[in-house]
Amino acid sequence: MTISLNNIGKRYNYEWIFRKINYEFTSENNYVILGSNGSGKSTLLQVIAGNLMNSEGDIKYKVKSQKSKEENSVDVENIFTHLSFCAPYLDLFEEFTLTESIEFQSKFKHFQSGLNTQQIIELTGLEKSKDKQLKYYSSGMKQRLRLALAILADTPLLLLDEPTSNLDKKAIDWYQKLVTEHSKSRLIIVASNQQESEYPFCNKQLQIEDYK
Picture 1 (cartoon, rainbow, N blue to C red):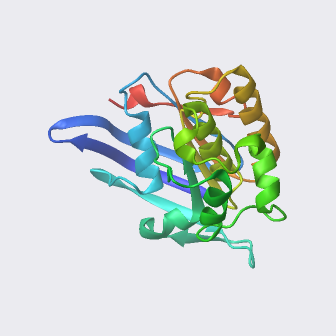
Picture 2: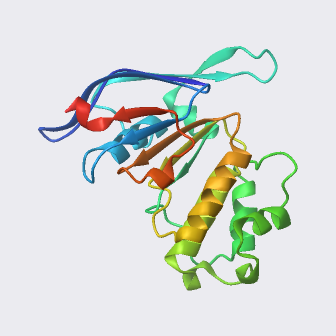
């Protein structure tokens, strides 16, 4: 997969969050967008995901066809079908259990080949709470679920916004292992405020504050 940012800028009212970003993301590498709190890294990730409209410039997406192995262009309106997204601010259905959450997502986005509901539950490390409603989960448990749903989805693009938020040391180790074992052939883009535990698998960096 290839994502090309061409003179991308985003502003709110008269304040520019970032401007003139020219950058290319390819599936041969994994990337981290670095910046302090409020610098615009999460905004850029949302623009890449198609959740926010850019104020200037354009984004081009190309996804490899499973049949021809050639990269075909994808419109921004349809890019959501090719990506999975995780952020601590994304809402979960609080009335669902872990099992119900996994089965609900599977109706809209396939999980990686060979993974069934029970296997995904085991991979979350939350087996003892599989029948408990999410409203009774701690913030760390909810983040584990968000990460598992995103990482284990069968998509060529994985977007992670501050993925270790609310995770303790044991859960961070779990996160790093899950990404390493289940995202080997994907394009990964992480947004982080310099928390190195969030992106040890990333070999390319984009400093958002270079585009002010």
